[in-house]
Image (tube, rainbow, N blue to C red; front, side, top):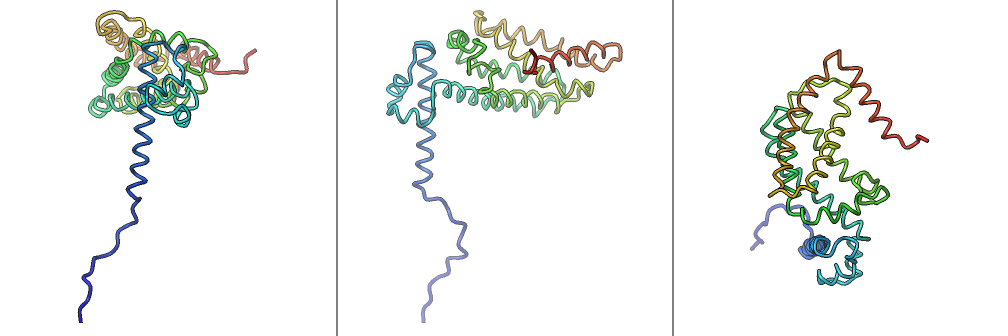
Length: 243
């Protein structure tokens, strides 16, 4: 009597390869649409680039483009999310090896410049739209909150993984203040025409020691009244119920 050879216990069910291929193809299509949009924004400007033009250049139907991105604004939000992911990856080595607050902050700021560098030629044109207070493309808009929160969290990692001694009240708000300083650096970078934006690099290298010094001084009793005023100001500008 013969018996069939045992194949061993069955493993966990796996997703059919077709499903994986479809998802991979969908992600490739989404990425192609986003990259095409950014190229056209650089070449034609944000206002003069239509979803129809983006779809045509990407080689997809207009309806397919709208399937992945509801509007041009959603394309930019996808770009913001992409930049934040890249910034986090670029900053990972310095956050993994440095404990000094200034070194961590300097590394993260330079990593941000590295990630943004390929888009410098497009940045000034795009900023004209993003700078409008009512624009959903503004980094301060509700639509930008996922990318903004991710960036603030990155600066929270800068602080939490460091050996910095910080006033307990300031510690809560410092990641957001660091993000605001990064917004200032980014604005400077947008209009920096020096080769490879070297002046922006020098700004970072000059500003970080000052920030580090101020953070260290925050625990001094004599400076606490001024610190409270800064934090009160931050809380006031956050409020949306001031008439």
